[in-house]
Image (cartoon, rainbow, N blue to C red; front, side, top):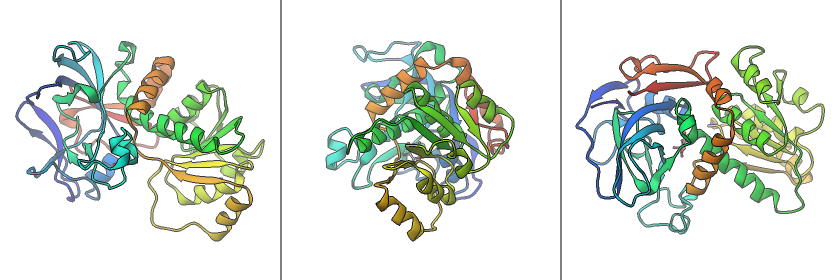
Length: 345
Ligand code: BGC
């Protein structure tokens, strides 16, 4: 079978590689790959700045935003051939730490977790793959064209759960959220905000095209003139930052309502926040926190959220589909791209 692989720590080593067919272990599903989504983490792995191959392997199969169809399932696994599934990205560390022992491997304390397609485990950008039945998530069959969005949705479901838990430190009835960045994470965060009945605002740079259109189709408000203008109507109770631009973080802290919560989901460079932002946080009881990855609770919340969404709206997020054979060299997102997907059939 063929897979999309890289030589970790080597820029632009991405290629289509022939590998032996996977052999399912006891308790594993054998899955025919349908598609994987490509994200910023994949871009870092392809650039050679992130990613680790499995022990004993030189190359890493990439792809952690998976979608496949079960070919073979063990009896009693709860899965059957034909089921649409995604594979959970992270596995608990082997110690395990307290968080991993409690199923909260997204909050692993010792960093020895592994991640499919990222850290120490092959990913899902292959014509076939195996996954433990306990780490497979079934998708509504209507989601076949867009099911690779489940992984980014799980990351967003976790962020929202953490916002709720942090909000519960005192009285908390948020009415509005500002999402900065109209990429897949930002748009899925906006979707979940709308599903929660919030007044949702989304900020991005583009002034026309698929991003503003997707926000409008969600019934949310699109902005492209900066945080201050986006917050001018009413300061947001919650900001979900999904661009990775540090300047937006400082501005977000400045423009939240009192007791505001700013959730960071982007990948930021090494610059440090200014003292003025810290002062604002203290004076207003603001919370700034980071959120990464997702545990099984979040994956199932995400599957419910996608099943409740309009599949046509989700389809707007997938702006380009590239066949596996053409994937190397075709993965950089264009200005109007939201999610680029590699098809594996
Ligand atoms: C993935 C997460 C992962 C993180 C760091 C993100 O792109 O969505 O599941 O934990 O990268 O490796």
